[in-house]
Length: 262
Length: 282
Image (cartoon, rainbow over all chains, first blue to last red):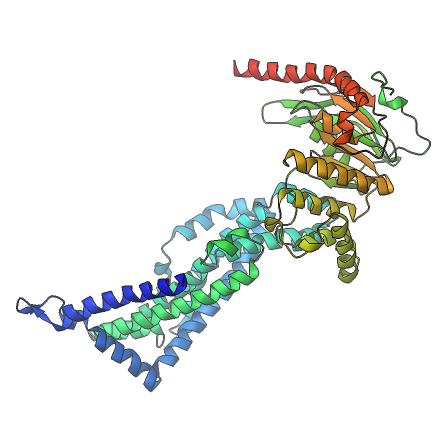
């Protein structure tokens, strides 16, 4: 019952927003449009565009391109983040040596790297993947580093007293602890993979949702821009729902992850 | 009821090699500015099958002594022998029940109990079967699939007890294991511990600040002085009959007698700790 109520209210929010948008862009008040349709388009136009994209099937190519960039950026960034995070956490000296560089690159607005990646890797998906990787890597890296560092001393001492050798400690203690930290940042890192892909496409590409939006913008096709944003928004929500499912399965042992959501 | 005067622990004679022997052991923690002598010249022998408790005021180095016995820290001086062999590195004959929550939060109760066998190379199937049996012994059969955060404080301690005992250690080290529990649960856990211990009589080194608990459980109670330079200042044999009920035994006159005697000694040390604390704040 409460779930249905919540859903109804959520729909209501969308309905109200769409209605206001519709009314202000299609009806004149005081002799003029309060929202000029040329600049703001109309809900009906945007909906028609989205429907057309899917009916003609042109959107799928862009969705597939963006999705593969997101998945590649996430996978590569996470793997690199886990490996380097582990390495730095177990070798404090290495971490100390690299510390200023890690800080520098992490605080750099990643968008300035996009032109370099385009020059190096071309207009294909790999320059977007590279941009996404630089974003995902640091999130995962910091979390894994923290996860390995913050293993409770009592748990560690217990593991050693139970007879674990170095390899078993890694597998039964450090690894699960690091993964739990990594998974707790799953939403953020996947979100950043999307940002990397779409921004990369926006700055120069031949396909993808970011490219679609940028193309529409180039010809003042506001309906196209909004339609692209809408598709992107749904795309992100679907990905987020998948992440939530994965997280529920993997972090069943965590009190926060199991209860805080929903 | 015999309550011997404090004696040097080396007088406790045992035919076989003692489970544990600390000989003039001292520990100093080094900081950037100087060092803190935590324990000084500790001589302690734990006989095979003996349940020995160490009591003392907070911060007296009881836990330090236990970590020494476990091999988690190395002594600055003196020597430690385990079953007649000098201790190097971790103590492989010891099981350690920690004061803090030390279960693996990402493993279920069953996996937590089985892990000690699995890392020793026993097949997962057999390890799980034996872990199930141990969970039954500590009364948690129905909770095998639960993660630690779904268990109460007392249940977690039961899992931890099974986790340690499943490896069948010769020596059991316990660092205020029931400290965080409420009074009723402590007594229940105390009885559970005595039942399990009675089955094969391991040597136990039990650290607590609760004198009543120490007397109710132990064969011998050792009192440590207030730190720094904490050392052993008293050694009592508790000859209350076994099997004991940790709640009922407290009502016996003999219990009160020995309690009064040990408390007289312990009280001096506790008040010393408080005076020190007041001097530091003043």
